[in-house]
Image 1 (cartoon, rainbow, N blue to C red):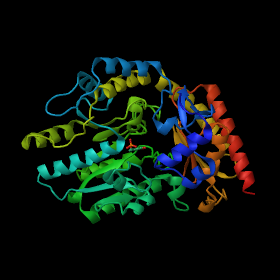
Image 2 (spheres, rainbow, N blue to C red):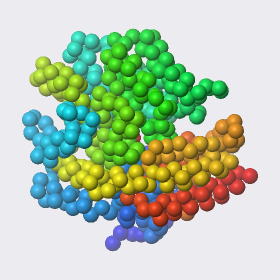
Image 3 (cartoon, protein in one colour):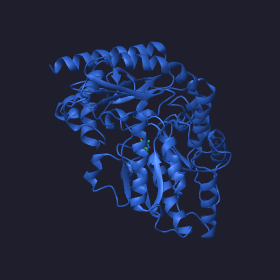
Image 4 (cartoon, rainbow, N blue to C red):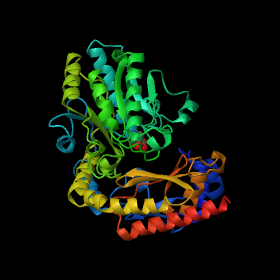
Length: 455
Ligand code: PLP
């Protein structure tokens, strides 16, 4: 029998585990929530407390925490063939079927898929692919990678270099040749008197300037999340992708859509690029790809990159890259089921049905004098706390306002995430209207308590 004495679980977690992305003073003051199981969109801790997980785990548990179809798909595949790789001209039947399915649901008529264990590895892999391609095509100087400030592309040394967050300085990152452009967040980055269209034009002009300054022949690719997730659920300014893609095309720079969060329904379409009406040269997928039931990432190459990379690999006999568990048959079986559940069992439909209610709830909370902005798309959204609404002045960071709100929500049985000065919600796609009400009731109570406490 597991020991469920709360103090003991907290102490055991604290003495044995190295915490990532965790506010350690909060853990010290409040202890660790140790989760034992889940029911629908709820998780339950060792004290028997239930939390509505307004963040779908880490954006990924879109089918909830006890989807029988997904666990049965896993079990059936474990019974049939529990593990294999995708090296040396061998791969599992499930891997082949998943690649075909991913191309079928992609914006491409044909392409090729490469598997990883995570979103970070998928971004790393694609950067290596672009570097490999540049050298094979006799353009070895094409190494620079363009992303945006506030972008989140992962934590491995390369994907962390793509991530545009200040904490990477703590690691001496980014590596050389990773360039971060302005975050296309009109509400925060727009200048006084600047219209959204003018702002978008400025973002495009900046891209032109950076390409001219660096030299197009030195740039390997431009990576972008359709909606920035860990940056704080930031949709692009209107017309952003339509403004930048022609510039990238003109200079032969591939546009990569990092769909780790947006992919498989979060924004109301299968892909975020569909929502924002552009076709990238490749797609990075993870998270909802397996509904969070298996660690997996995928690089989905459109036809041009797929053909060129295949030729480049043939020229040296192989593409010398891969992970032991790339294309794992159980992961692929789960992903096939997850895609079926999302597309054919009503999850995507539910995202679309719930989006107006989600927006209504968020807009209502944004009437609070200390909420400066609601932003988001589909079932992802953020409320940004401000000390002064008209001037958008943030609270001093020493007040840790968003952490306080998230902690108070946890006390009320709601999990939501502090990101900068914002609170982010991205509930599972299986949410009911009643659970949506519960989420907003709890968040509203927490906002009231925290803002009142700030005096
Ligand atoms: N790309 C995006 C857009 C993400 O949101 C994340 C993770 O949140 C990653 C990449 C990294 O994925 P992982 O945590 O699986 O390495």
